[in-house]
Length: 197
Length: 343
Image (cartoon, rainbow over all chains, first blue to last red):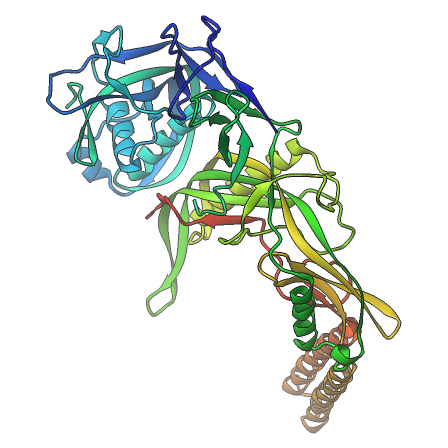
């Protein structure tokens, strides 16, 4: 086993980090690169602006945004029809961004965010930098984001009222990108700082 | 993850010389002294880790002697058997830790009411668990070891091939990885469909966390009994006998043959007798046929006990003999951060 020192792909300076983050910022030139398959490479990412100013500490949470075409060809659900009609549940169909939280935050928060944001796509404004705010450590590799997005769809189909019986669908990924969403840490829970619902 | 799964191995930081801790499955490594960032690379495409042997030779031999006393083994085994050799051996295993996710839909069949009517209950399940897959990575001849479970107290140490006796890795990394992923996905589907009688839809994924070549310690004990050689392998950390061969108990075999013969003879005789008494009516013939079939089955069962009872096979040892113990399953769930859903 060997340890290979990682260097910034921009300026060539050795990378330094206190945390095991897949998104490594160069302390020399400030460029952020993505660690994948034993090396670091260029990555494009966007940062959503906080919707309001709050007194709590702001932290940016990384998500994999998987843009995919979801085409459900056949589906049968046993029961739950009336309840689905009354609650007017949204359908997860067509082309959309699937939100897959890539940070090592409490799973319950991540699961809820992923579902809520994917169903109700937020309207975001963007900023160019983190302005000194913290970034949550990214732990999820890009390679598994797509399948996590697909599983999110399956989770949705089983969690809606009724019992899923058969399902036939195509799930085609168009792109996978990094998006940082602002969040505030209040006690031990995280609250997203974007205007959503 | 338990401590055993969170393997920690120390390496030296190439930048500052400080101690760097590497965790299983983490190929991004940080030095906490100089904050340098490293990628952990390996020749085989998998990190190697070794577990420290904590069972000494005396304890291993004592465990084998205890094992001789259990089950239908030759009665004078403890007095007569001679240990010919006992040596430590590290066996390599491919180990994959991954989150298995599956969506499984189908029906459960239930019989209800007075007329026992079959009712189909629709079921759906989501599985989201962590699993460990392990598979032996070498040709062991027939040691009867296919898989391992690393005990909590196991202590991981850096792999050093100078120090240990081991079998060479013969199976390919890619094949093992693929087989592990397949097995984990399959297990996730099985876990989801555990209550279902028919599965209409299933889709599964595996998200790898760590893929490691694990060297696990064993004691291999060879012994002779009445001119034939046998063996036993002892887990080098838990001291459990995990596999082996032992001579069977001749007494219990002849008893089996005797009882089997007597019982089946009696049954057949009863059937024939009844057929004569009832003068060949349908009922009599029916009982005769049932009696003979039962007699043949019984005879077959006891014959098998007799014929294959000459050797006791512990663990996953192949061959003819009386199977004893259990074969370690290749996939184990980790009940930690489990997000299953059943309906």
